[in-house]
Length: 482
Image 1 (tube, helix red, strand yellow):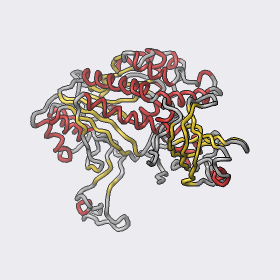
Image 2: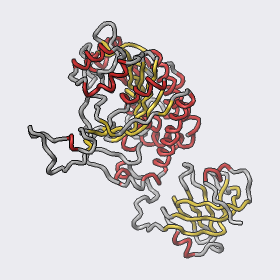
Image 3: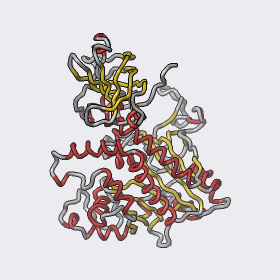
Image 4: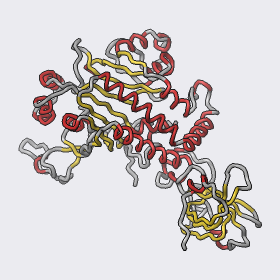
């Protein structure tokens, strides 16, 4: 009977020894001498490789010669107690087959330290490295955790469209979707592009958010969440921006702002706990990687907490809640502001907070995660509920160490007349949003929601500093490879 392949993650945990096994994977390293070869084999199921011991009297010289870094091989043999330090078990090979060779003169991932910048240039191969294997296994785990959290709470997964005629954020930085001839498009009488002749009969774009459509689901099913790609045509080449990124956006009927904050806090603490409970090996590797990367930096530039300490910090500390107005007073009177240390000075109420301000509140002032509420209406979106003071809206942003804002949300404006008045103020045509206004005309109800950028979460849980390193295929200005 043919031996079934066993994944390396399972072999490393096995307790039964001296059994026949079959393993397949990619060679990370090969070392040895004329008497024995030691092969580190990895199949992606674990950060750890398993050692394969190959005796030249059993495995032919031609086969051993073809076992190079990057080659894929199939190994039959016995699982035995390891003679060396660092692992409990190893494989004594009885047969090795080279499935796919890798020319050592050309294969770019040789056993040495590669910079993240170099690996970004070969993003099609970088998942084979320890660092990116760990990141993408964690990306899977955190995706599953998102679905588990909402499913266990009775939320429904709501699929919102990628192609849309609405701009939820009012930012205008959207990718157009069109099948019109780009050189000679049909024109209207006044010389503008005639989108009535386009595929959808109107001007359409890739979505920047599923929120508005999410509200439709919440006002029928009660509690929904979206989790999908969103797109923004912002010409920004920073370590914090992508043109294609994934968003998690729950929307809940009959939730006020406090309910919204409670849910978001519970959600973020659940995700951090899930990472600690289910990604221990990958977290340990990434934590050590971060320590090694920072040891040559001045103390002031190093992370104040290790990766696991940072996750525990979120779990252990109830989030501090205060208004934007209170935060402005703290920031205005802070030492960094008075001494001109902030790149963007805080001059007073109405200032749009920057990451440096948000991090000061979390890391220096409160020393715990922070939720800011009740922002000036002029710096927030049209759909946020107007407060009684007429100047602020029921918004909430959650601030984390090292990253600043990680979640943004609000209680939504459920009062038709207030919403239409706000839209008029901001120049948003009612006729384009008629479908949205119907939810306020027919059975309106208080409701709330928030958005969590998944890549921003991944930066936090992996300790990476560039958002392009936590998504398999980054889309950025001037770059759409693969």
